[in-house]
Image (cartoon, rainbow over all chains, first blue to last red):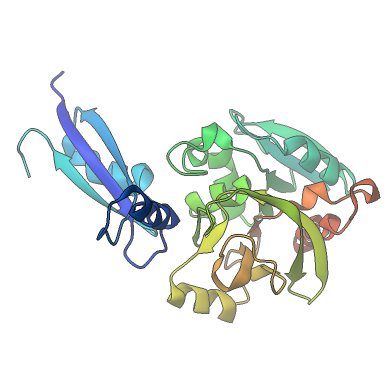
Length: 80
Length: 209
């Protein structure tokens, strides 16, 4: 069965406090990385799908919680 | 009154919940593969780390057969109490509004704290969680407050996680599904310092009456 490789990027919605992003941002100057702002930490899910048309539904139902997270689906077969 | 306490892989507070329920009636565990809630008057979804809390706390547990049965049970008006991870599961399942995010300070908190119930009573109950920051958009929070759906708040200065408007627990619009982050099942015996947790279970039983 042919499958399509895809990546799903999930991040906290704009306006929701992201303490992980803040913690990373605060740690950077001590390591000599100045001038880094607006750090947001999310997660990436890689998968192979037999039916990539259903990825949106998959994101809505499980991979992301649409109340608190935005997601982007990136198909690696070149389709939009 | 017969209570059913869900036992999901990774639950860790189901025994204390079972004990708390048994003080108020009969109680039994409901294994996550069970779909049969026949004869059960009220359901408790207990605390723990169901299915490892992978992806997001509570996200995977909602697809278990027992949770599908709980969703039907709740839709038909059956009383459901979600505690800590159980609260997260009920939010993920869409049975309660809102979501629970990482604690604002990224720390796991574990201590006795004071809650304010709707009748103004102060309850001394322990809380222990790393992802308990209640979130809903501002408009939704206004609506929850207007409709009397905020069931428990942290007492002033007690909010351990940055929850919006000090919200510790909410109920659904119909009123039969309640969830809270603190652990009333750990506060049912004088031996552990407080029996205030029983009031949370009693409120669920009263909703049934």
